[in-house]
Image (cartoon, rainbow, N blue to C red; front, side, top):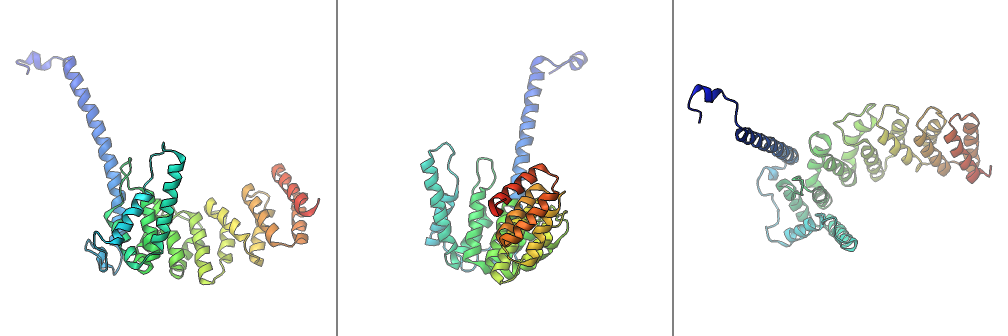
Length: 327
């Protein structure tokens, strides 16, 4: 320690500066580690919040759910095997081992989705407890998605409130929101239509919504399962210049599956729009090839080709005319 004023005012020695530097490095590293832990905790908390927000399902309020399987029951053993099979192996293993592991996970997931309600409730409980974490300190996505699917398909009524919360609430990770969207449309299509209609018809989707492409695809799934035509909404999305591009692309591709006058009208409008997106115009062309008669399709393509200014698009149209119209 300095014994007088001169010593106290003297510049720090090299050893002191080195010690301070080391402390500074440790402080930065500690702050970085703390920030990473905070992100991980925040994501886990978002999922926990969605799980605990299930209206009318008090069993998730940190209490053991009614009908849950005992800790060592066959149901819990089945879930243990599923979690293990869905956990990715090191990437440097041989391809045959990786393929075997992948197929094993797919088989166990299919069995879990077809399992009894008890298994679905147990899968929801596992989600509440949290999936195992990977090397990055975050829950393993493949496991989270697998548990969510197992719950949604084997216990759809119990899982529905969670799926709705994940779709509607901004906060949980994107992969979970997307998976919830797909599961909800497939297992509770009528409810999915109610939730998705405002999203599909929204002129300008927001960042708080799930990915636009999956909104569109989930809409078609829910419509198909309820016997409702999705064409009107698909046509609106496909021709909406303000809608997310991935959503528009999905809508154009899907419209090509419907021999509906409105679908054909929308596809024709997209093709004719010379200032439109080239990729969308190609998708529209392929849809028209599938749905129009040869004569009608060739007539449309010839008219567009005669006025086409985009040389790349013109080459594409000539190729289509040659293959489908003999010109």
